Length: 314
Image (cartoon, rainbow, N blue to C red; front, side):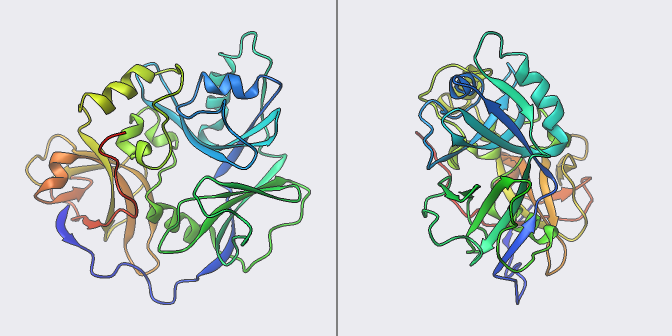
């Protein structure tokens, strides 16, 4: 990566409000009187204390602390929790989670056909939705969850039964939503980066995705050790490049043509030209020199400022 920041990578005349269908996301439903208790033992965030006016960003990790999926989770009722995740990981994730149910009074199912998911931007976000990120507000049968903003624009997820009316607002193309999602700096794990990162490599501890005070879950020791022993050597960065990028693509520091120094986590076309991406990168590679896409002599990537501060400590 170049050490210079982009002078202006935000397109002029960007739509400041809109409603986008999010076909790349699916929904896992967890039902039963022990739904929250079950998820408490599986995910990186605290679901035991989850209220009806809140949501959670959370990861499902392997025993080695590597993220197998990420979710925006919230309660529709005291006994029903929805987990919104990347659709390409849903089936495998549902199978893995179901293996741990055992005697818990919880039922898991693929509810992607039972619910519709939209993204709301700018003035399309209901004024009644509380301001803090990961707040939830009910609009009739719809659940509205505030996400991290992007480009100074409010953003929210709108999840409702499939037979509900669509949210009100001007139509927004899904690729524009995906670009804003990248620019929010909060990554969604998808199949190409399955088990590639511990949560801190995607800055999850800084955006509400990890609770270090909750009970055990798969991979907890690795995640905690990464945080408290200072062993983390990768972070998520925002980058801009002139050529297409996709999740799973490798990036290289100019000084080493053999070993990649990072991986593209999420990418989208910038409406002003080029591509923007969330890249999980070695902090040493980010500190100096140039990082290039695909190979050591590939297109140079340029820094974009992260829209949130990183937490150095708890």
